[in-house]
Length: 208
Image (cartoon, rainbow, N blue to C red; front, side):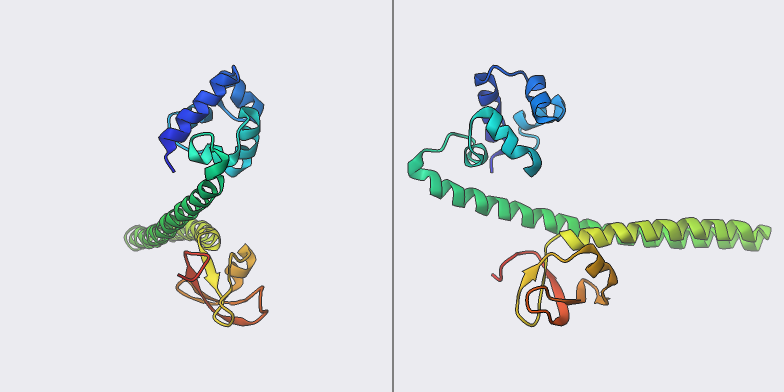
């Protein structure tokens, strides 16, 4: 999807409705800065505001994602094209999230060991054991917080594929958190077939 083109289209339709950026933002319950970013092609409306935006501007979601009013002759073709582009963008976003998870995991582990090392130096050189436990506690706390955040990323980014029936789905946070795992492969119950298996993390919702 061409964000610049979509932004120009939003601006054009807003002006046709005789609305300022601030007035449009107020009707959508967002900031005028968000509207400005849309119109400059810096971001796209999210799902929570897209339908309401289209209603205010008198266009369809397909028009919005195409950056123009779509004729009936090419309507189905544009819907398919926009859906494929949205799937592609989600897969790219999920890949970035999973890379971010690795970075967060490495940095939080390094930070923990740094706190332990600094605390050990204080304990040996100045006999301040309380400093060691304080720094260890800080390092451990940030590791726990980062681990919870990484688990959230792993839950929502991509899908898990059942080894028994091949069904791909997004599990609940509790399922991911409580499951045995080897890397990103987790032992979970499939909601489709009801069987437990080692399920691998995949990016696409369909087997390619």
